[in-house]
Image: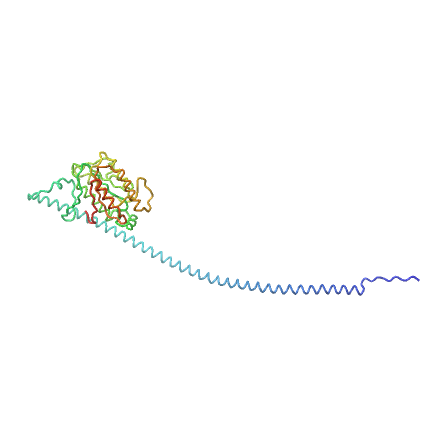
Length: 365
C-alpha cells in the first residue's frame, strides 16, 4: 500500500526558533547601539555647555573691558579739550608778547634815531658856535665828509681802516644769520614778522655800521653799496654794475634809507659778493666787506640743510678764486655762534689784500 505524502509546514518549530533568536539578536544590538549613542550625546553636550559657559564668561569680561575703555576714551577726550584750550591760551599769550616785543623794539629804534638826530643838531650848533667865536678849526677829514654820523658822546671811531679811495664798494651780508648772534635765535627770528626782523639788534648794528662808513666817503669819490645773501643786489634800484657819485651826499642818503627796509633772509654766498667786484668797471680801489661768518652757499645755490665747518671753509676758499688781486678788502666781522674759523679766515683775507680787519664790540658804532 502506497505511503501517503506528508504536507510540508514552513512555519515549523525550528524555523520559529531561528527567527526569534535572530530578532532577539537584532533588538539586543539595537539597544546596545542606542544606549552608546545616548551616552556619547550626553558627553558631547556637557563639553559644548562648558565651552559655551567659558565663551559667555569671556564676553562678560570683554564687556567690562569695553566699558573701561570707553570711560578712558571719554576722560582722554576731556583732557584733550582742556589741553587744546590751554594751548590756545598760551599761543595767544605768546602772540601778545611778540607784538609787545616788536613794539618795544620799534620804540627803541625810534628813540635811537631821535637821539642821533638830537646829537647831530647839537654837534651842528656846537660847530656853529665855534665858528662864530673863532674856535679851533676842524680837521681836514671832518671837513671833507659829505654825511655826518654821531656816536655816543664825543667818542672817536678809531678803526685803522683806510677810508679813502676814488671808488669805494660796500658789501653787506643780508642773510638770515644777521638776525641774531646765536643759531637758536636766528631760527626763531626768521619765522617772525617783517617788522620784528627789521628791529633785530644785530641787523640794526649792521645798518648803523653802513651808515657810519658812508659818512666817511670823501665827496669827490664814487661809491656803490650792495647787499648779498644767495644773490647780490644794489641798494639803489637800477644802478647795478655802475658807480654813483658821492657828490652832495643825496645818493648816499638814499642808499642808507633803502637799507633800513632790507629784510635779512636766505643763506650766504660769498661767491655772489665777489662777483660784484668783477662786474664793476672800473674796479673798486677800496672794498668794505661786512659779514658775520663763513659762507653757507657757493656758486651753485642748493637747498638749505646742515653744513659742516669744513664745508664752509671750502666754500670760502672757492670764492677767493674769483676775487681780483690788488684790491684792499677791509673786513668788519660781527660775532656769530658756532663759526670759530671765521675770524682767522677773514683776518688772513684782510692781510693778504693789504686791507684791515675789525671785529667790533656790541655797542659799535
